[in-house]
Length: 290
Image (cartoon, rainbow, N blue to C red; front, side, top):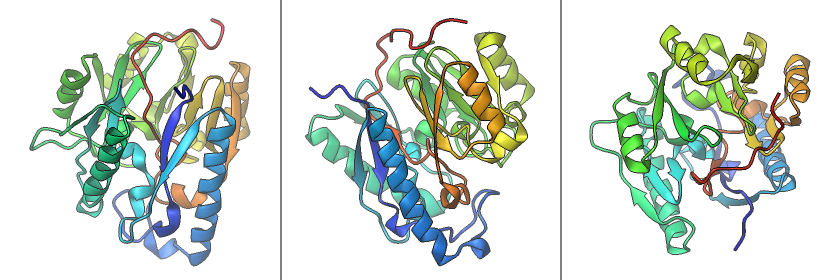
């Protein structure tokens, strides 16, 4: 049995910025040159994941669905269960059937065991707004711009674990994964200004100050919080030196990838991946306690 972390990515061949559903997106700024940079960046991200010990499968691009390159939004996955997403914006709703077929194929191969539909009348955009914290044994659940608060109870019922609700305060950080990243060893990298006071209080209640790594506005604007963590390795878009120093000081190794075209659509490393092998089994500590 292959025990490596298992990620899905999407071929970026049909990626562009052709509509605007968040403040990062401006179709007038998109150029053909960006498409080539996007393809190179996606390949480098895949390579970085593989070097960090992961295996990666790539699903095909679909013309007219440029944001299919962000499979983190396709579903919430834990212990082989897949809770399918329902997108708020019509521009992304065509992705739902594509991802359903992907998960059905994965189920036929024994790579996932159960596919579950979201309740009618709710929106939830997958692992972008339901982030499993392995060290603490619960989900952090974002809601507001994209996902319904009511969907968080479905996440809890589906997987059987607590979901800590975090209301997002700004359209710029419209998914939780754009501004919040639990790291192995119990640290949490987050951008405080993206949250309501109630959400910040929930974070502070559950994460000791010594384990909180606050991103600055500059670091958040680089979408570096939207990172993939495998053990002590953190893979992200190009980071300001300030963030590099913060993470290095806590024992993490940064791997940076040029992801500017995807940032123009409001996504980066975490958005471009969906991890399928996450389990609720307790993990051994990766980094020594401070």
